[in-house]
Image 1 (cartoon, rainbow, N blue to C red):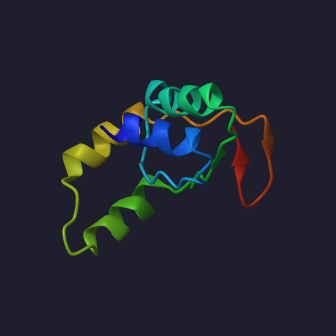
Image 2 (image 1 turned 135 degrees about the horizontal axis):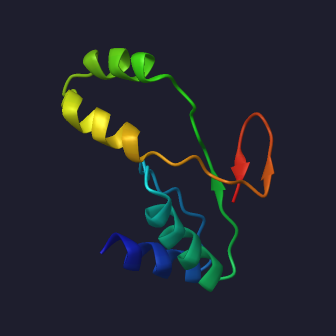
Length: 92
């Protein structure tokens, strides 16, 4: 459902902010393919934070994510491979 909405919005010329963790490069690839199919470019924010900092921030959330889920997420995290990068954004 989200992919269809993303595709339709991009195809209509809308600018889209798609907020998702996307730890898995294959999941990110799907979003990139949708953007490419509509001729749109993608700008992604990537926050390189230590696991300790991440866990501390998570613990302070009103509804923290379970620690086992954070560990699984961290194990599968793949850094993006940008075509162009500066300190504020990554162009994929």
